[in-house]
Length: 352
Image (cartoon, rainbow, N blue to C red):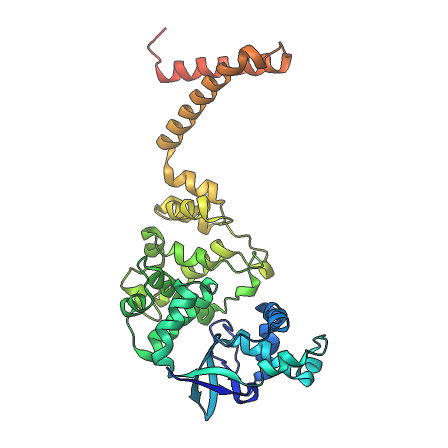
């Protein structure tokens, strides 16, 4: 593709940039977009790099023509950094403190290298670079991009995955999580900034949707999760429950039941596989209680007895070097002996 050169003032930051998720920006909101990127996407690092090394000519921007403007589709952080360096008035309005840039730096950003193409032609390059490549976006920005490609260009998830070299169903999982997240936002105003974790752990959702028990709880299957609004209307309460269990709700003092994906998410999926587990979770029971109810007493007894046997054998390994006649340890040993006798008599009542 031919490289052309344009002054930064002719180039517009992209309000559709997946990094700017859930923000209602338009092309007119250039200053607001710069402010958001500066505060949230480490543009200061690029500013420092350009000030130290000038603008690297091989770092082309990719732009498309929309609304009679040149909109940068790829390279928005770099463009924001250049605008901050080159525009002292912008720096003053945004409250950004910066020494006067050296003349060599200003010369290097007087005109920027730009490749012009349509979004449709650029999608696979941008997708590979930020979803499956070296400069990955966070997972929710990736999902936003996949959703936009499918909605705007009518691409299938298989076509998107093939275009960016995804062989691990990442595209499918991101899309599933994103459409369910959008439904939660539309149905009951789910707020990603109101969760228990200050950084919204989006991966909890798209990973959870891979479990059959969680799909069943929401009334969906793999095929339905390929739609824009997969969760049936009559399962809205279940969707709200799931979002609370995965993420919590700070304003309502609801604690997330999933603190870490391993093992909490797996345990949640198991708890949702039985009516007892579902009942306990929906009645505000703990994840541990719901899991135990789902596993059943037979499993729990076997697990507890096996664990006790293992711990007793472990203690035997250290008695010669770790026991010095302490009274409290003698008491514990006596208690274990009595409980072992009771267990044996209950398990084999006919034996003497």
